[in-house]
Length: 75
Image: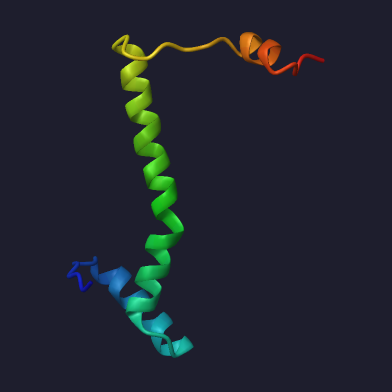
């Protein structure tokens, strides 16, 4: 699916140079960058949401000691 994005001039220039030097398209590198960082961005969002839920009392935490006991992970 095609997208349109605006990049800062310095990033556009770097992307142009990289594409020219390697013979790959700018779209290739934009796709690679998104793939590389999308998991990380999703993890950050989920962690922030979970923290918000904990602070608001919508989610309870479990002490690590209880988890270790339940799964027989003690020393």
